[in-house]
Image (spheres, rainbow, N blue to C red):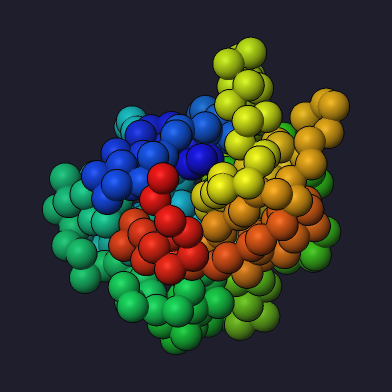
Length: 273
């Protein structure tokens, strides 16, 4: 059961099926443009003035896609903006997005493809030297209907959720941090067929692939509650693993968020039907 949002879920299902695994698409997050008027206005501002930022952190591929979806100003000759990505998937999206602006891939900072994890903690050592008093860091991210805003001082000043640890590091180094909401995450509307698939996949031999804790939140919100002790969770980050364990999955296995690593984890832990 692949829970990534559309359109990514289709790519992952196709790749897993090509390796002989009977994958099923069950997106548990919907992604749309920002809804709040103030978020829309801020996004429009930064699309015009992104060159004012010394660095821009795009928290996901969705952040890249929605930020560059329309009306992005051309790069100025004086612009020295760096583009930060927490993983290679986001970095690839960024390379495609900035190429029409005449900017090369060497503007992008991201953990190496063989990094142990793709997250802010592994990105920070690569970009910390760029952060200093007087520098402006723009966080391009999403908002969510699942849960509260961040409560820490620096993170609370930036709209949306996620990447709060890196925001705190930038603030501690004296940089100014601003937020830009490029997309909104919400629980999807599940059909009767969706509910039937989900119910059936609580049994033995079923593996759920999670790349976000919010997908688990969608499952936990179902009524009546489902029991997950016979199903397995294949997760792409320790924080997601902790959420899956809390949700009651009988087996939780962590892997890196690439198709090849997911396939290796499946091959080492399960047998194709």
